[in-house]
Image 1 (tube, helix red, strand yellow):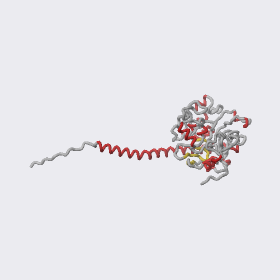
Image 2 (cartoon, rainbow, N blue to C red):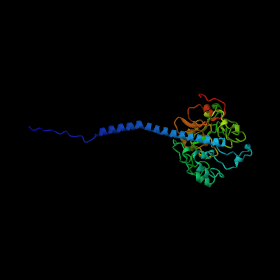
Image 3 (tube, rainbow, N blue to C red):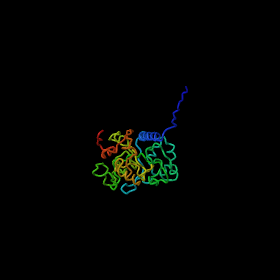
Length: 333
């Protein structure tokens, strides 16, 4: 008896329909995982930003331990009649960030700067600082980091090429530099930063005449505070915080003219958001604290701790964080 077997035809691979189903499943999985990957990356960037602020806080306290005072934001002073005879008007101008360099493991750079010339003046200083970017001053979440220029492509005020952006800026406190620049700061806002004399007694100009008018830890001019001057408590007072420097003419780290933040702008102010949409540059719209982290910004407080403040923070409460001696308790703390 002869048995005959019929061989079933084998399948050589996937059908087109099956292949499309597999591709669709893979695409769906990638779509589900991508936000989680992006969130993890941003969390890592935000952590690095927090570490930068922590290091800056340590550097500021090391400076204060050495010199018994915090540095000034810059040694620049306006040359106006109301200020009288002030030696800082004519001397070479420098940023307080320059003074911090030896305490941030950057003494080599510090030693190369010619202190007899303004930080942005003279070929030697400009050549030294051009293209010099420092990790401790750079927020990794800022997509324009290390471009070294304004959002419109122009150089920052006082510089002739790309320089380190000031992504972390000294807190100037609740002052207003001029009644023209009220922005978010109005009488109705109750934000404590209006001053009828245009800032002469408001911590903006002539600080040597009335240093008690300075409401932040830092100011232009020679004012330098000690820890004991922060009577509201070091854990409740901002020392430095994040900014978006590419939207202000004075966005360079080394700037001496407008080296501090202004609290005439709310945290991540709507004025800044308008400038971002239009890609315009105006220091009065962009000199407030802001960040590229969702929901708020990070700050190093006067005790060296790092704190995240929400965009939703009440404006007067935000101003209390910026003031060293308002004598008022911060709600909720």
